[in-house]
Length: 514
Image 1 (tube, rainbow, N blue to C red):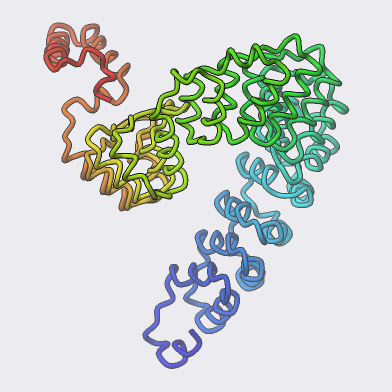
Image 2 (image 1 turned 30 degrees about the horizontal axis):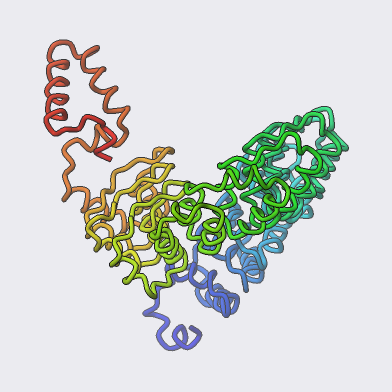
């Protein structure tokens, strides 16, 4: 850069993109930025994108930010995006955020989301610094307290800090207690602190107990604490037992604790064993249950449980479970289904062509409604996606329980190759999920404009005659009813024509169009 500026400086434009690139340069960013500011400072704009790039630069970000603050302090604005970039910078984000608060803390445009982000992602020193700088302007909302309870690294110290400095503003809601119960690193310490300082405000709901049972690293300690301090309030529901059975890291320990303390409340059902069958820890958990509750557990190991293990790619669990059902009930295809699901997770396709030649049921769904194609697309396994869409009986538009088709996450993640494969195979693009998002809307939200163009071109080519009505079936029926109610004779007549056309097309169930 120094050579270019020296020899051909009059030909070089220092654009915003050049400055942003320097701010994001991990190895030489500080030297390049210093050179640009020295040689061409009058041309340089310190935009929000530049500050964001520096905040996210894990190797040189702190030094670049210090340089910018020294040379262009008044031009630096600390926005939500800058804080987010620093929060995601696991190597130097803490130091960068502390520097920004020190030099520009009085100028920060404080938002509720920013406070929650700082409390949830940084350490207690940064939070203390923020409160000292701008404490009078900061509201300690439920979201802020919840973020503190969910902070895995510094949650206990931050929660203690908030209780000390702003105790009169803090409410310990059910969501806060649930966040503490789910916190895998600091959960036990936070829960102990809350029970000590605000005992009377804390409700131990079913959701709190379930979150503790599913907590992989701290679940056993949190559950023991809750049973010891508030055992008379705790209900051990089937959902709690299922969460423990599904806990890959500490499920057996939590199950042992529950059986020891509340054995009379626990029933080993088919759904409990299904929950265990989804995990790699299935053998240990079920073996333990067989020792403790043999008859109950044996009766709960059914062909449906084995099918669940297969649909989750758990080959070892499948073999173990099949040993506890009648040989006549074992389905040979289960092993191939498990191999296919495993390949969709790992991308290892050795032997998958042979599996596909056996006519395995490709549209088998796991507990979340996901097929092997759905999972392969989600995980970026382009080679397997290509193989699967070539199969005549594969459902390219299978919807998960959240209403998302295989094309949704590749669109969200910017995986253009997989989007093209699915579009070429005829994948529909207009399904709305439970949050009202489509593949197009999520791609646009995440800045993947090229994918947006691909999807819109595909949607235009498909020209779904009733796509607008059937994106959400209930909206379609509501439109027809509205036609009768508000549009009078003409509207009602038009609605009847639409309905007649649908019936002629044998769309007796509007969901069939999805």
